[in-house]
Image: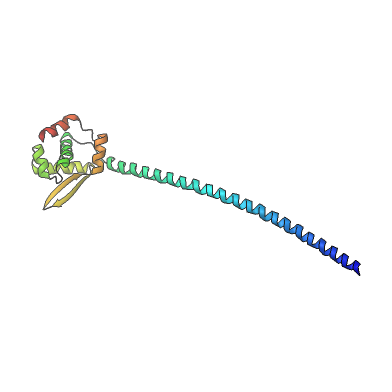
Length: 173
């Protein structure tokens, strides 16, 4: 009777060894998949970091383009001014530094013009694309030059205002 027991025992042992071998294969496959998954995760992390840098650069480019667009919007429509219009512009430019509430009367006094003539010149320079800011206070128009345009004029002399005009305006003060 011992013989069948040994035979069964060896068959069971062989079956368990077969199961153990299959489980080892499965374990190796799982380990390989885990390694592949980890490598893929690291690669996706690198791609994510690169995309973030690319996004930052795109935002910088977008801001740069936006700044240049704003600059172009300020200077593109500007047409050349006559000498009288340049004098009025420079008066607004210069008096705006000293006096916050600049009026047509101030411009007229500074240039020896009538108030109506000063208003006419202001309207002309405004129609040529010079960005002026106007507000009404106590029934009077108060003028200011757009600060961004003023900075660009200071840096780049967009209107080609020469020294003679500038000196003439300064002499009137």
